[in-house]
Length: 173
Image 1: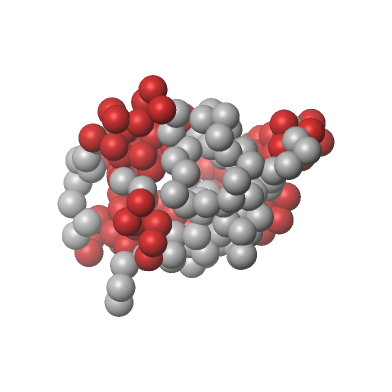
Image 2: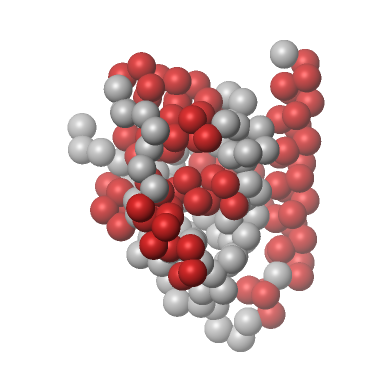
């Protein structure tokens, strides 16, 4: 328990420091005009723009979850989201992109309760972000400073569970 708290604290600190560095010296701050979609209503970046680079996009979109979104899997995903995954720090307890750390990020984290998000982003693209982070790799949009989590402190199976839970937040109830 204590070792997990230390890991969680280190991750949050690293994300916070990286995000602060982006705010101070990131390319967005140097741009005369922010990229298209920046600062939309609610602060969320244009959801139609993928965070996956073009060269990786076809493969990412083809990735399929290794588990199905059963109630048990979604409950496990929620526990990871709210616990050791530390997703809630940026995305908030309800997945709206309003977590405590969101205030210091260069752009708002994804609002997973937005039903439109599931229509334009695939589970495979979300897994790509979990594996590679959101560091502005496309050159099209700035990153949030999210570091890779799958392969670092979450298994790929846990990554699928958490992203299936995140996607469930935007489904019509």
